[in-house]
Length: 118
Image (cartoon, rainbow, N blue to C red):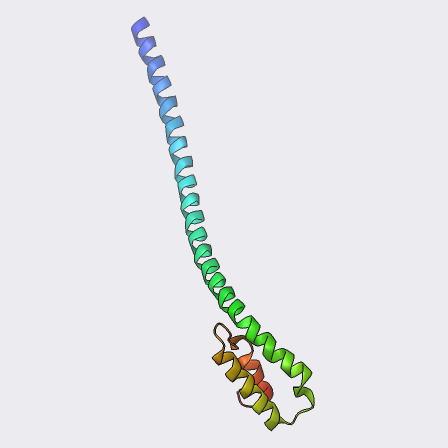
């Protein structure tokens, strides 16, 4: 009888251990799914941040040219007729094209709309 009691105790302990292991397995599975979702989300964010970084770099390269054109418009173009503003824009755009590293991408569309050419 003592041997049977010992075996029953061992069986109960084994069943309890099995239940504990099953609970741990389920918890680990949930954590793994959460980690996978987090990893996917972070990968998507990384792609988005890389795109935004590239856009900011492009915008930064066009800033000096944009500032040149905007400053010229503030200083000179307000009182000018549309045809004269168009010539001013063409001249400034040409300067930006001829100057290495200078671009006007940031202001091209708004200026074209202002000039009535876009």
